[in-house]
Image (cartoon, rainbow, N blue to C red; front, side):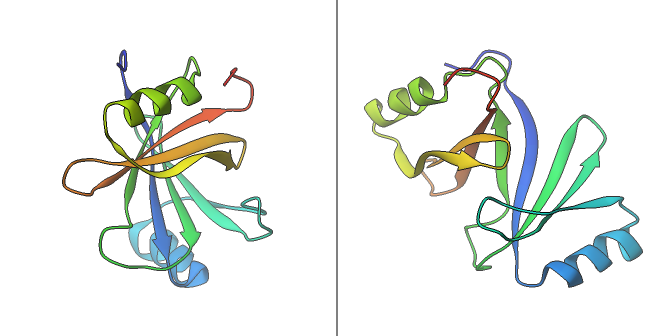
Length: 126
């Protein structure tokens, strides 16, 4: 189904964005950029690391099983078709295709309940 999949991001829900920023910046030594809006008026953090992978931090409910989420980039688009194929195969769709900062995303669960996500930019046809 996926040709040459690439993990583009690891998505974390965090309970305190300022505390998270201080920890990853001051203790771990990452360079973080505060993004002004997640589409709902809330800021979020991004740290780019080796291998063109981004760590993304959003305020949200922190509970076992909902974080972190590995995000596969769909460089050539087709997120609607990919999710339709997953649903047709009986895969649990956690979040249908919806707007995300700068593009579109959708979440699904593997057979053990682990959540994964697909993301594509707005510049690529859905």
